[in-house]
Length: 280
Image (tube, rainbow, N blue to C red; front, side):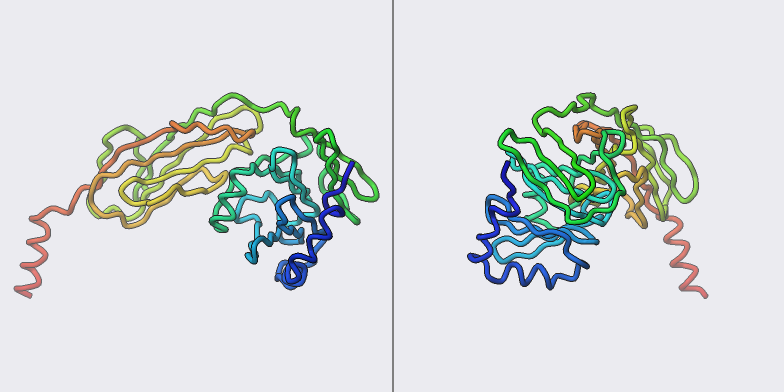
């Protein structure tokens, strides 16, 4: 068994400013520091995880999808997936998602969290936490009191794609059925879409993404929130799309969609308003 935290310490000599910058990052106290095989330096703190690579310093926290802010140790597995020991669970981030975060530090990532229901002992005090990876690929997390092990190659995943359902549309406090070709009245100010990804296995871990075609330029990532809100949309035709993933990160890419339109204000009303101004 070999500790990456110790075996990569010598890499700090090739990045003389890495440790200094990491310590100066405004993230609270640093619990642990470790190197990845590619030379990335990671630091765990009270408010998230700090990464330093090729002179670039980035911060990963609840905004990006962490289930809680306090982190204690990090390590990569043999597939280059990234594991984070946190106060409320053990987090796995796929290498593709981690790459997306390096490209855009504001990204909200798809993560897998292992909690008490999976056998993880959470919310226990961590003193001198560490993470090591065995030659067989198993990952061990330990402190002075507890040792926990996970085998990334033998995890029972949820292979059931979650159905996605659009429940209703609320426009200016009036409720509409989520039916195709919905027509909303002129001067609609606020539109709300209530939706759900359905799973009987850990429904609290179901995540969603949505996009309003004709308005959004990219997918919105609300996490576990089940509503989408838009204000002051212009008259026209739109399509609302929503997709969802289950607790194992399996996405229903087809999802659900709804085409709707907002009617323009009537020409007669506009003319009447202008004439009223002229003769006043």
